[in-house]
Length: 155
Image (tube, rainbow, N blue to C red; front, side, top):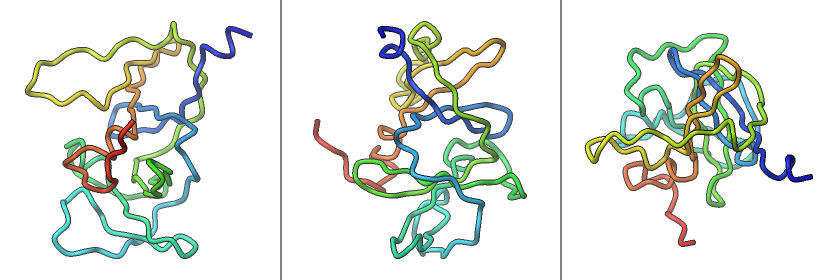
C-alpha cells in the first residue's frame, strides 16, 4: 500500500509549448471556453467572470498570467474550474492533456532562479517517460498577493 500513498494525481494541460500539471483534487470540472463578462479595472490576466449555475466565477487566462505571448482561443481552449481555498474560479488554458499519477520519485524540486523570479507556486517538475511537466501549486498561485482573487488562508 505504500506505493499508493506516495503517488499523486495531476491534471495536465498545455500553455504554449509547455505542459503543466495541477493536483486533480483542486479541479471541479472542465468546460469549453465561452464568452466572459469583463469587469473594469481588473488586471489584464483576469478575463472577467462567468455565471456557473448561479455562482459568479472569476476567469484567469494563464497564458497572459505567465507572459506566454499572443493569446488565441480555438476549439481546444478550455476553462478548468477550480475549487481553491473555498472559492470557485476558472483558468483558461490552451488544452487539457490527461490525468497522470506521479510517484514521489517522478517529482523533482523546482529549480532556484534567485529572488528576481517568483517560483513559490511551483511544486516541482514531473517526469513521465520523455515528458517534463511543470507542476503548479494552484492554491499558492491563486492566493498570491498579485492575484487578489482569493483571500490567503492561514494554515
